[in-house]
Amino acid sequence: MGKSVQDLLAAGKATSAEAAAAFETLGPVRPEAIVGRWKGSELATGHAVDGTLSASGWYGKEFTERDAHPLLFQNKNGEVFAGNPTKTMALGARGESIVENQKEVETKDYQARIRVVEHKGVSTASMLYNEHPIIDHFRKVDDNTLLGVMDNLLMPEPPFYFVLRRE
Image (cartoon, rainbow, N blue to C red):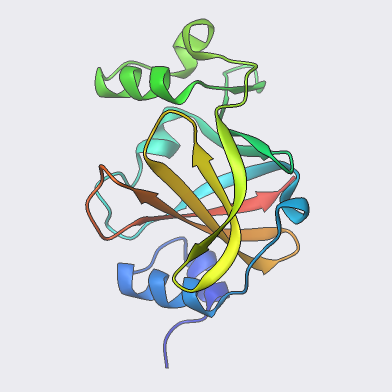
């Protein structure tokens, strides 16, 4: 028998196969159930981008029923701000600090949409980036915890997994 979702979340790491199996055991979540700000963490699976979000100062995500700030960051003063994904990805590619370049990347405009999308046979709340071929699909662990998987057309399989905890 495989590890439980709670075991994987407590460990903060899993194999890609374990993460996929855990994700498949979880039920869907509706857009109205995810409204608000969520603190994010990576579920380390050995993916090529493991550690990059944490190192960037990534804080999490914020949702309305229809729109989202997909990338929230926390600056050195503890303030949380929304980053424009195109600008944050460009800084990351150049090896520059997102947090230290807050004025360049900060946005008040939503950079993604929330929709119900079928993923692996389950219709669930998903976040579609406005300017990138990325869809984050969410499954409900409990009322205050989501397991997410990033479906990125430009990123090879296996997918990147992350955890969101309601503030």
